Amino acid sequence: MQTAQGSTRKQKLIAVGAIVALAILSTQAYAYVTTGSLSTLDLHNAGGSVDPTNSSTISVSGSGQVSIQPDRALLNIGVNTQDPSAQQAAQENANIMTGVISALSNIGINSSEIQTVSYNIYQQYSYATPAQPIVCGTALNDTACKIPGATYEVDNEIQVTISVSSQTAAQLGTKVGAAIDAAVGAGANEVYGVQFTASSSVLQQADQQALQQAVKDASAQANSIASALGVAVTGVISVTTSPTYFPSPVYLGTSSGTASQTPVVAPQSLTITESVQVVYAIS
Image (tube, rainbow, N blue to C red; front, top):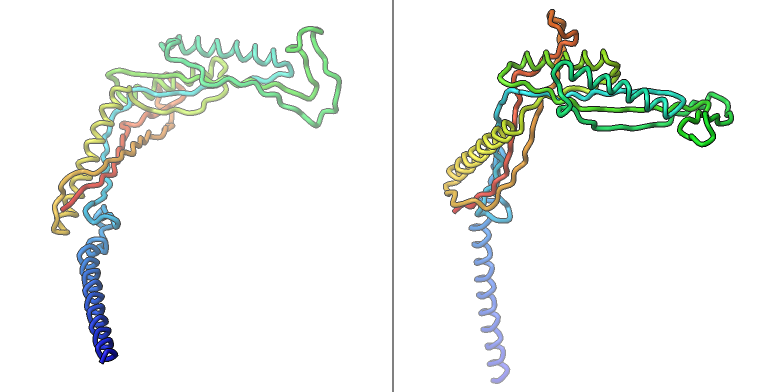
């Protein structure tokens, strides 16, 4: 009798265990169905996405653009000189650069709009020349020494800010061309390029406007996605900005009979672009 009772008790325990296991599996399956539905939706075409690790958020990217008129240009001009003597190369470079700055001053560009951006002295060797003794002008002045087969190269670069007020882009381009002509005429032999831009106040205002447009764009996308899902946007979790600025390229045209022999066509507008990444809470 004790053996039969023990067997019956074991069967009851096994049955109860099976019922509990089925209940746990049913609960897990229900939890998976209720929490896994949003993460399986494909929302890439809508410009946003639902966070797969948290179904209560939506992530979107918004962008905004504002166009402004350039009112200044940054012109990089250089003087490169070479000589077997480092001292002579540096002195010649200084003389030419002084003339360049004076020529720019004569067309209305003062010294406050000119700054040195780089100055370098290099030693270039000519290995085709047989090795010879170093010859110095004086025993105590090493800078006057000349090394046969070696050349010293001096590179001096300045940046010139050319600005206009209440004038057109065409007038800005003409002024840039005149500056190039004046500098080259005074002995400058390197022009690194022109970048058209605007004053800091104009850039800052345009940047704020582009940022506001980017936020509005992100908000519109989030609400559109939430509406399609049958949920509502309830708040902002985080915002990340990614500012970008696209300066327009420089255009060189043909001579139009103006005083400048170097025609430079300034762009009519510059585009300021801002983008944001926003994570919204939904319910």
